[in-house]
Length: 299
Image (cartoon, rainbow, N blue to C red):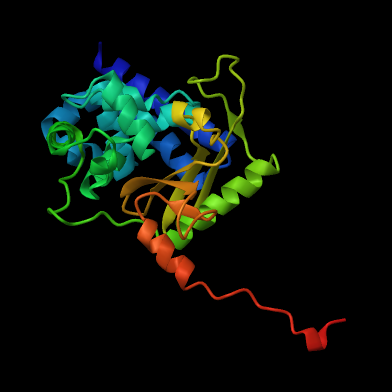
């Protein structure tokens, strides 16, 4: 494949992403960034694959209009030929395929990881491992957890754009209040039919565009919200309850969380962020009680 062909193909994916974001009501500045990156790639004299091989992500970021998130997208396309964000916007993302790239993880294990943890990116799986959530999956003893941890670390060390945070250091994330507010906004707008919809490829034999998608912001964070379209969500009738939230900030630290309606315990009936249950519990316990009407002033 020629140099210009590689750049052209990646530029086409950048433009497609910009068009999908525009159709889905995303931030115009984000849309413009992908369009500018596409123009840069088409005008570049060097093969971006060669730039990445020689200078890594820093070399990509030296190109006009290419910031960290776009450089990470180019890196993913150069290394794998795929771009998970674009596949998500198209409705074609298959998380089990993503997880099968981890050494030691086959199709059945990939499905279990996805269905049990409600994550579909390598970075979100890494966060779940860091939080000790793998050990809560039935059949995941210390040996299997160690296999997944080692395989995931090996894969991410090869493809990530920046070094991992120090051991024990958690990645910054939006406040629980932001996550729950985006979840509320998404479900309300989806119920009212006010959001654009996409046609997921998985579990949608009729090809119907039923899956609402929302792009929004809270503080420094950019969010994409979408209902879960997993086999487990369909099996339990939770396709309009489990909400996947993808987010990144101005420094392009990216992450994912899932919000669900809790079915047991103190938080039964409440919306809860998986992996951050204690914060949700603290928030619930300290929530001011609803005001009670004074019967002496009734009527």
